[in-house]
Length: 253
Image (cartoon, rainbow, N blue to C red):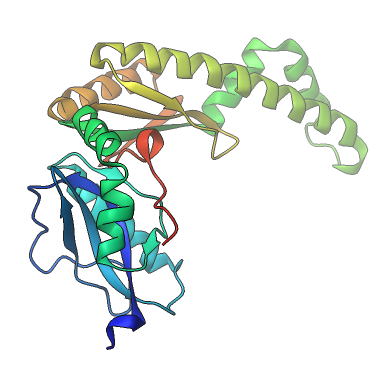
């Protein structure tokens, strides 16, 4: 393939002494082989890409995340946004690495030994509904009013009940998120509270913590799940690159 028919896809910034895993691949069809472009103490994880190939397939998104997340388990990684493409290796070194050298180096120092985890909790529907009805007499009254009655005949009551339930879940979500963040204070994390991804989300936060404390983090969340006694199902995702805290966009090139 002619040199002018390719561009350079940039995944993220890492320390200059990083070597990619042999035969590691990234975006593209066929997937491009991952290599590094170095400048001083920093480097960029890159692969080449056909210049006219559109990006955005599920396979591209997965390859981007898997490379960054896998790297973040062993070295500090400053992730670039999906779709960061530059014209050539020289542009990567001069326009990306050299221009942002001090900022990138400082960010990597902050990330040393740390990675992002996402904590997602979802209310168990039957359990949280019983809790809401026990606590809210008006909601319980509306529930009885619509029980075993045609939907058309109870439309207003159903709307009112739905609004009460949504308001109650929002209040409980705020309270349970505060509880979770409080439990995590011992890890001295950076915390980003994400928007709910589902109407029954109880907790949805990203945290940046020390990788060495992953087992302790898992144990803390296990105990919190026990304390909630079946009302919330908690998932821990990660370790992953620190997307919520330091994701950068490559310059146009």
